[in-house]
Image: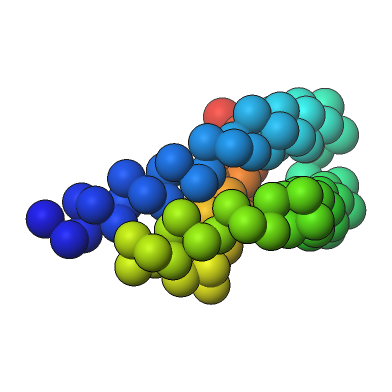
Length: 102
């Protein structure tokens, strides 16, 4: 039950920026599809930079936002590590999938 509760809290946190992340990922995959795999390095670092910007903006305007999650037993580090790791995994998965289909 604890794992389910933690996963739901992480999903609640992730929903605050999932739209921006998905749109950026779709644009990167579209560019990867058009320009072949030689542009992957540039797109990877662009994705990392945009995740850094998302991290900065979420932290700058929602500083009290973390108390909700901390009171429920989920640390700030766990929230960010899980969501950013999932985002990079999802990006890599779709990049490889697009490359294999093409």
